[in-house]
Length: 334
Ligand code: COA
Image (tube, rainbow, N blue to C red; front, side):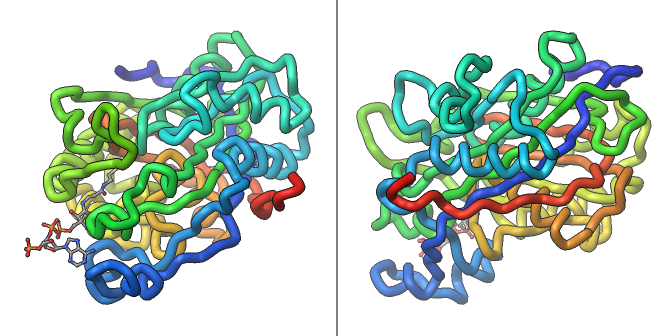
């Protein structure tokens, strides 16, 4: 599925926020109870540490803190829609987003969750951007929030080393395609025949993953989706100035960049410090890129993701001139 190239009206990114739990778990911490090592994990994945939420912190609290930070980054206090992309909602029913809206003092605002695993943020960005360009709403908070520690088997060394908790958010507002930060085009896809590759099996608590097969499927899917989205907006792949991929594994990101013939410095990598945070990984990496001033306002940027479902998706945007705001994990008192 592909959205038409934006002409005139567009959703424009105006704020960027994050919330990371305060507890850091290093590879050495994991190696104390798992048959693994920092060297194995770091050389195979690029991950050195990840964050784990406190027992009192739900996905909603992480999402609300990141959403509040994105509103502050944009200098706003409200919006018309709260969209939470998550694989780990606090409850099966109801959705997380209405509680997030109420934690943000936005009761009355439209709010729903979107589930597309690690592609969730790009899917949510596509949905929110389409609602804005269609005139259904003026502004939307798009939040990727995860608490993978609730579905990760602490005794499974093939997954426990990968995932982390956290949340990242962007505020989108109605503007024009000429503005820095404009979402120009999105490309989404899925293949349900691969549902067993990343799954919490029915009746079970923990995620199971066939890592090697996921790796092999992720690289071509992200490359092809990036090519499609770039072509739709008239960019040669080599003209992409910033590639912000889902932060699953540094070797996947490097392989995607190599196939697109992009120099490594155009790749934004943030997973060393936070691991794979699923739907939160792209907005966290965007905030990292903004913090480090990696991209100039207006730079040709592609977000690209791949995850369980299987799902994949990409978005082409121009880089926004925004300063990210980081909020701490809320304490037990709220
Ligand atoms: N420490 C040490 N050894 C480990 C290990 C760990 N944490 N995890 C697995 N191993 C072992 C395996 O048991 C296997 O041993 P064997 O050869 O004796 O059977 C060996 O390392 C190779 O395992 P394999 O799973 O083939 O490793 P890999 O090189 O494919 O790396 C991943 C594993 C998970 C890092 C890699 O497949 C990956 O990143 N895949 C993508 C996962 C992903 O990104 N998922 C989310 C997508 S949204």
